[in-house]
Every structure is written in C-alpha cells, then in structure tokens.
Image 1: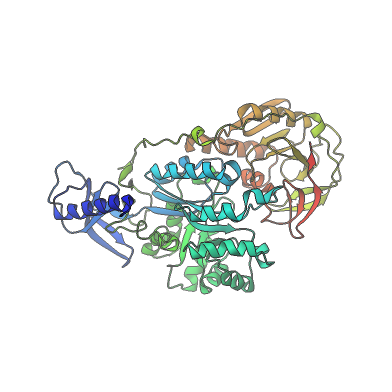
Image 2: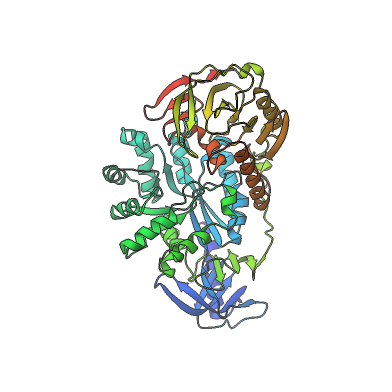
Length: 580
C-alpha cells in the first residue's frame, strides 16, 4: 500500500510540473530580476515562477497561463534566497513566534532554534505538539536537541535521559544535536553522552559544539568524537584552526560577543579562498540588539569587511542549509525550493525591500504585511506562572561567606564577603548586593551576595533565568519582598523596586520567561530596563544576560544553581541549596 503522504506529495509535484507545461497557472511571477545563483556564484537575469509555497521555474520564459497571477516587476532589483539564522535562542525575553515575525521583516525567513526552554517548561508530549504548530507559519522553524542543561539541576536525569534525548533527535523538526556545553564530561568519559552523539550522527544530524578557547588538541579530540560544528571562535586564528580541522564554523555577532567584524577582517587579511564552511549567527541576542534585524546585519558587516558579495549571501543562506541537510528545500533560488525570497534595491544592501516566506508576502515594497497565524500558547500549556508560595523575611537570612564577583557581563569569580549581611539594607559605599535564588515552586533557596551588579538599587526580581527559577538582587531586603510580591502578581517577569516603590516591570507571562507581545514594544522596555540599571550602578553592557547566566555552569568560575553555589572548575558544590 502506498503511503497517503506520498500520494499527496506526488500530486503536488505533478502540479508543479503542470505549471511549466502551461496547464496550471502559477500564483506569483517575479519578472526581470537579477538573482543570485548560489551554485555558480553568479548574478543572472531571470523570471521566477511561484506556485503557492514553492519556486517552480527559474529562467527566461513567462508562463502560458497568466490569468489571476500576481506579477511583480523586479527590473533593476536583485533577488537572493531568504536568510537563515542557524543558531537562535528564541526565548531571550521574546518568544519564538514573535522573534520569527520580527526576523522575517528583515529577510531572515528560517531559524534553527534551541529547545532548552521547552525541556524545562513542558512535558515532551506538549513540547512536540507546540513545535509542530510552528510548521503552520510561513517562516521555517527548526530545532536543536540539547544533550545537557548548561547548569546544575537537582534532578538532571528526570529531564536529560536517553528516552527523552533520542525522541527529540528523532523528531523531524530537529536538525542538530547540541549545542554541547557539557563537552568536558565527554572528555572525562561520559559514554551516555557519546551514545547520544552517535545516534545524532547516525540520523545524519550534525552536532554543534560549544568550545570557547579550546586548544588544537581538544578540537582534534572533539572532532574525533563526533562534533561537527562550533560557533565559539573569538578570533580569526581560532576560526581558521576549526576550518582546517573540518569543522563547520559559525561566526558570531551577538549582544555579548560581537566578534564578527574582527574575525572577518582577519580571515580576509589571511587571504581565505573558500567561505563554504562558514555561516554567521547572532547567538540569542537580547531584544534591542535586533532592532535593525538579524542576518541582514551580519551580511552587511561581511560585505563591508571585504567578503565577496556572493559569499556573504551564501554564508547567510545556502551554507547553513547545506550544513543542516535541508538544501533540497531551502537556501537557494531554484525549482522545487520553498519560496523564501528577498528582493533588494542594491545587491550590496541586504536590507530587503520585499520579502516572501513560503510564497507569502511578509513585506512588499517596504510595506510590512500582517500574518494571519497566531499561536495559542495557553492551549499548549504555556502561560503565566501560578505561584502558591510567597517570599518571607525568613528567606532573607544570609550567612554564606563566599559571594559572586561579576567581572563582566557573564564571568564571575568568588570573593570573601566582608560586609555585614545581617542588616536590612547594604551600604552604598561598596558594590555588594544581596543575591537570592529560589525554586519557582518555592521548595529551596540559595542565599549569597553579588558584587558589581549594582551600587544602590533596592531590588530586581526576575523569573527570567536559565532554569526559570527566581533571581533576586538588591541592596534592600524590604524592596526584595516588594519586587517578589509584584512578580508573583504578574505571573512572572522582571520587576524593579526602589525605596518601597515599583519603578519598572516587564511581564513575562509565557512561562515566566517570554514576553507575550510585539518585539518593538519589548525592545523599548528592554532599553528602559538597561537605562535604569545603569543609573543604579550596573557596570557592563547586558544585564539581561548577566541574570540569565548566573546559573550557567558552562562559564567560569563560580555559579549559583539549583544545587547551591558551584565551583565550576572543580565541579564541587561549595554551599548547598537550603530547603524552605
């Protein structure tokens, strides 16, 4: 018996051919444009026929049937494939749906997304049901299968186990394993992790490493063990080492690691001859960093730094598609490909005047079109956090002698606490602030201090964190309680209190992690938050990331986690979490 899915697909393919034969009319025709052929690296004049979501013809001819066909004259314009973001963390205050809508307006019509937050927030069944809904969007949404939590969980095996990981790898929307932040465990002999990696390779899915500062010796070992790509190069030299060892290399331009311009300068100066194993990514930047788009910004930088124009576009489209194994569907303008198409006024300006995603207009001649699709988050179990506990004065007892010293946005070292932490409010003459990490279900807490986050702020409370547990930072215990109460009323979010008053709040009503609203509004709110925190003494560039990575054990040197205060290098719990 022939599978019904194949019968449906066969009918679709026959209909595509019928358009060329003239018995079926296309839905859209782009005429007289100059398109980038990524296979030959040439700019060629052509007419492009589209039937529904597919490109069916690229060439000199006009269809025999034109009745009811939408035409756009692209004379003097340049046509390139829709851009691909190969390394998205789609929950940095924004949610995946809104990030995709925002990205598409700037020509990024495919995103390959981290699945970590779904593993924390949802059961596997609900998560799979949710990611299937994204297939209804004209924007292409793919996912990773995480192998580790990048923190220290109290019940790690309940989330990261073979049954769960292998089922994620087997999901058709999942196109890679990783990113592999637990690679030191692999080096120490973790065969369960190696087994998951071998299963990913068996399924033809690449494995994304997370190898910042790795030596050549380590990179050789990781390549042998199955890691196929890495996005952690911080210099041109590091990128070249990875390329020479056969890695697919992602060059990063993010809110905390904007390394792309310097790396490209170095690669161009080195006289690199092939860009085919290179892509670019924004690595889950915070909202304001995306004000002017995603991959269009990266392409612009590449062109400015001397990368051949054709390679700059291929790095943001075809190279990624080829790496993930979906080049038969995406990444080029050719028959049979999904109609993700950007129309440019100038081939050296990657900001598109018009954008097609799956043959639907996202933007047409500078006017953004509305998309009818709207995800029902509540139906899939993602909504406000329901708190059945309250923070009390008993929770604000601090006795641990070691605090966390914030050295930059995300790196922390231990320091000996020298101030009196039994008092109601810490003095402004030093940079110490109370730091409290509490289970979102109210079962445990970890109390310490943090230095370098604020000089005088009363309190900030955030349900946005690596695991969705609650972070409190501030000088005043009273303000911590006020911020906590308001955060719980909102059902999750970020709340700033000072001298007994709420001075800022950002509701994050999707799991306590994500904003349920427009990206433009979120960008404005994030800018306001940054401004407030800087006024109160935050010293660095990205406070949102500082909060997110407080518990991220893939970074040195000390972290606050569900298990307690962790020495990352020694993998030791210095001070365990306390049950409430």
